[in-house]
Image 1 (cartoon, rainbow, N blue to C red):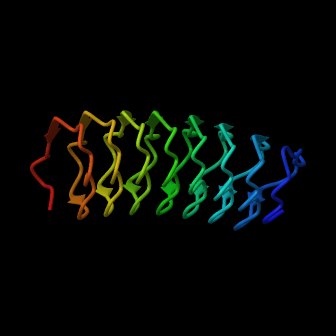
Image 2 (image 1 turned 180 degrees about the horizontal axis):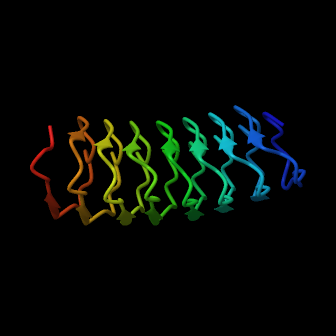
Length: 178
């Protein structure tokens, strides 16, 4: 469906287990999608450029969200991440400027480079205790973020992870951060 600019909705089969790389990339009229419960993986750039995609419920079985999977989905206001999720690819939600809050599941150990960059309305972020690494520019340009609590297990904080977070008034770094 890559580049199907007029596609507004789609019904996916229940037997689907993977949403491949770029599957709906550039479908700029797509407003919503119901991802089947059997899906385990959302590929790279799967929904990138789906400008009108506003809400996504990701099924409980999804363990992997690829790089730039939702890149530039600037209407995406809410997304619920499943508890089984273990991988959030680089830039997965970059440019989702309407996203106001996100709760990262306990299974995620690393937040990749630019994962939430340019999410200008992102104010509420829950990072679980198990996260050990936050990549470069992970939250760059999250202008609405005022405070962030970093987990004690965090050992790596990438360059510019909170760059241009101009409303950020408080941050406490754990002892082992490099």
